[in-house]
Length: 163
Image (cartoon, rainbow, N blue to C red):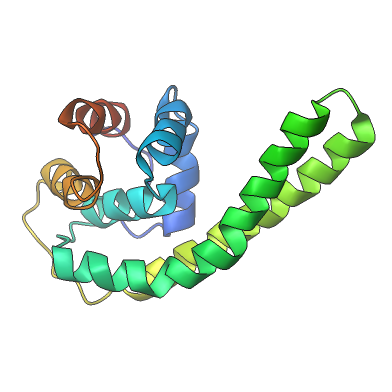
């Protein structure tokens, strides 16, 4: 796993670093839009593995309960509004694009807060074996196997993140 990140980096820095990698954002949006994945939880599972923390179904459920209301009441409405503006008005009107940009910034701040909530439940997880790549893969599968998501899609994301 080639990454300049330190194991003690926060979830937000980890997410931004990996989301910017070639192909990751497209695959994450596909997981989100076609399979109902929460991309913040996707990165949380990977971040835990990067830190050597093994995720189990009970801790996943606890984390999902912790972030559900924030995601449903704030992040999703902002995302829907931003996307609806693009569908209704396109991207040609600069003043509408300025509004969309502000909404996107609010959405990102809301996602950053959600990631802080996820970090708050991370300390209770045990450290695992030193092979962090396999822990990352395990953790991602713990989450994505709860969704209608193929192993091929999971493997594709792992290939982009870990290698």
